[in-house]
Length: 329
Ligand code: AMP
Image 1 (cartoon, rainbow, N blue to C red):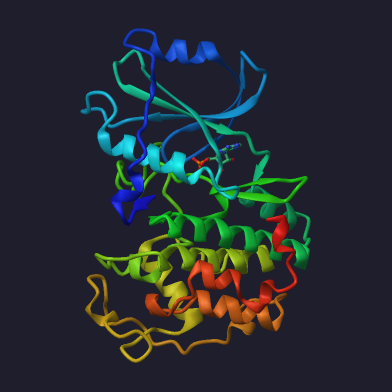
Image 2 (image 1 turned 60 degrees about the vertical axis):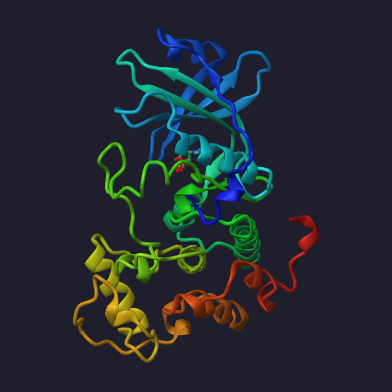
């Protein structure tokens, strides 16, 4: 998550501090860990029960940089942003924050979130493994909620920068979708690897980021939303590269190698090279299972030139969503 405008982070933040020795234990006195449910970019996520209320929560344990004393102000600013954003019904709700130290004296932040029973990665995988398509109306309501959540973040001056099915949480029963993993990426800088050394996925990364643009903005998230849209329709990732160069080549092969005509300034970007020349394919040939309105929206999300990409707010008004009961979301 990155703040575009720092005024957005004005809300004060307090952490419940569990001091020095045994801090980790004390945070755990309040919650009973039930099972590990996932691993995010910054740490493990547990399903846990709040002992006082019995409420089921998701507990995200985050280690802060080792050379820092206490919680860095940048991290606190990010948490305050997260608190502000989690007022939206399409952003996972941050319920509480606990600070402690482990035996090695490292500062640990426990972020306590509302618990969601699955994520979009698991949901897509289940359909793919059963050779099932995700029903067309389901794709549409998931996409509408995603656009709405992203529009809310962008409207508050916040970029996500790492939108992917893995950090879109879902409720299987209601099909509610909520954006997660909004926290702390700024204070930790955008990592290339997870803390477990697992490589981060590049599949949803916008071409301007891959090409090393120093300045980028909200369109990077829209690119990711477009990739997720295509994956919902087909259950297969649209551009599945395993290195930055491979990722770019995948994109170029399908959408055509960009040039100064379609994307003025592209050849000045730091990682630009002479790439093989591919002609663009029609989006309708790349992604099956979408109607004409859906393809039109997808094409607007996958524009090379970032300023030409549709905004999240405009996407919500696209004819594709005309038959969505917007009051429900
Ligand atoms: P994240 O660090 O947010 O990317 O989370 C990593 C994984 O942990 C997700 O893909 C989910 O499987 C799980 N997870 C994260 N947050 C929650 C939550 N609030 N409720 C349930 N599972 C979660």
